[in-house]
Length: 231
Image (cartoon, rainbow, N blue to C red; front, side, top):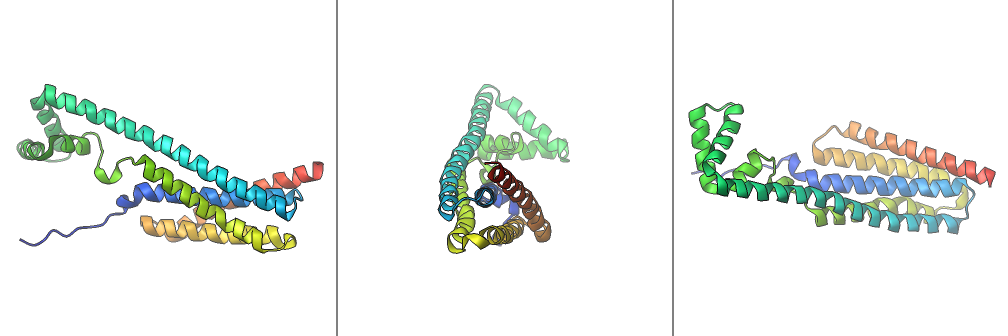
């Protein structure tokens, strides 16, 4: 018998890709916006760098904590559903057969075949069959809080490092325009890369990320300029 070909699907990237893109995008936009805001308020080069580094550290920790709590809540829900499903199997295994059969009938199998499929899948892994087909929980999409927190913090730091490196290397007189332009370039590359990995339209992915980055940086620079004038 020929070996089964293992296919790779884009949904397998969903968990870590979401956390990585969100973290890198947030790190880049928030740090670039912070740098531009302080620069527009006539801060010194040192003030701008300190604000940017503080934003990187605070943002990375906030992203890690927020992602961990959010994904852990999802994991808790999954565990609770699986615990209840185990109890239902112990209490009424025949009822669970009927329930799974009904799911397959609703998907297009005829009742006899649906019953046969349900019997075989439950004999192999009853809880796994119900988790996948009744609850929508699969191994590739399971919530992984620690992985999500680490990826978010690391990607935020990578994203935030880009405008900080530019800030550290360029003179104050050219800082705003260079941070703005390079940040937009990095955002476009990030959006395109994420779209490529996720199998989406690359140009649309780049535009979507860049558009919101432009708005965020422009708004923050405007606020910095306003307060810098008033104060």
